[in-house]
Image 1: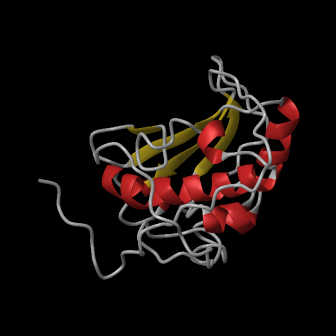
Image 2: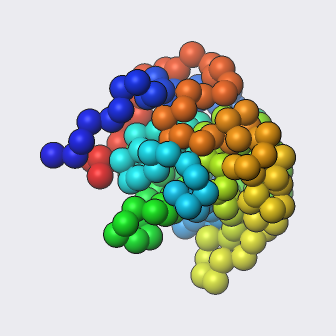
Length: 202
C-alpha cells in the first residue's frame, strides 16, 4: 500500500467552490477547447512533490481556483470541467520520470466562447491564482488550446516571467508560491460544501 501522507505538515482537505448562481448555463462544446496545466519539479527545491501529493492536495486546490474563475464568469464548473472529478479535481496526472522528480497535472475546459476563456484565463493569470491554487514555486503554468498542437493563449507563467510570483529563491517562496506540497494554504477559502466524488487514488 502507498505510504501515509505526512501528518505534521498536511493541509486540511481542500474545499470545493459553491455552485454558481446563474439563471441559465450556456451550451458548452462536447470536446475540450482549452486547458490549464502545471509542470511541477523537485529540482526547484520543493518538498513532498509526488503523484500522491498532487492527487491529494494540488489537484483539488487547482480545481477550486479554476472553478472560482469560471463561477465569476457566470458559468458552471460541472458543465465547463466535466472530467475534473476523474482524478480528484484534475483530468490528468502524469509523472514524467520514474524518479518522481517532475509531475504534470492538468484540467480541461469546455468553454462556450473564446471570450469566456479570455475572461477566465485573465483571472487566473495572477498571484491570487498562485496562492489559491497551491502552485509550487518554480512550476511552469500553461494556458493553452486543447486541440493538438496546443497553442499558448497567454505567456507561460514561470520563475523567469513572474519571479515575484514563482521564484523559489526570492521573496515569493512561501508567501506567494509554495515550497512544500503540504504547506498550509496562504489564503482563506469559503466554507466548503461536501467534497465531490472522484476516481480512485493513484
